[in-house]
Length: 216
Image 1: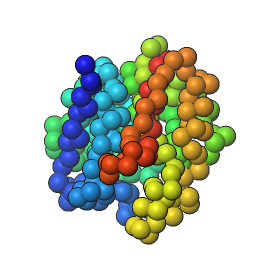
Image 2 (image 1 turned 90 degrees about the vertical axis):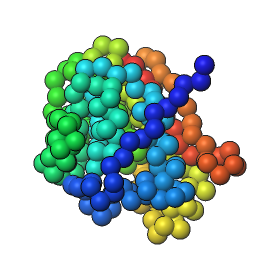
Image 3 (image 1 turned 30 degrees about the horizontal axis):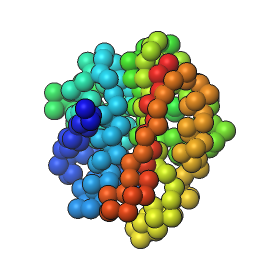
Image 4 (image 1 turned 90 degrees about the horizontal axis):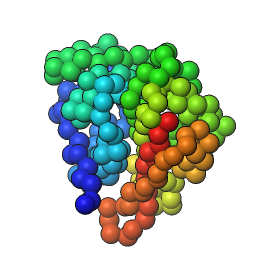
């Protein structure tokens, strides 16, 4: 039976707080591009198994929190720049308590064997290839035995580069690692895992996003 991915639950755009103008938040609400942005998150969420604690690295504006609240007792988050106080207050108003901090995936302020799941959506492409293994080693440290890491990274294709250029963004200034760099690093640290792809939603079958699911 084919697995059904959850539909991404969103607040109205004007409700979100705590991120700068460079955050791609607005893209999720565009008519066509928004489908791609929402669907890649839905594919990642569909891999999560639920449990006591989930950590999202690079949580941004907290777009996934409404869905994560359905599957986990506690939501934890780590982000380099997001305003943790503003986002905490926003979701508290929705009846969702969060545990948010600023920090990096390469040095996480959590004890060993603490989380059931670690989620990273469009984060790992922003770090350099030589930093991938240390990042995954740190993820493995904070995961419980048999805990899962789920990540999503874009697959750099000419179509994707072209579409970002249409929006005035040179993606090569922001993406330092390819999906192969990320996948190879994950396989060095985790004993088992799977990779799946998302294809462009315009009928041409081009793979544009990769989702990794690995277990400790």
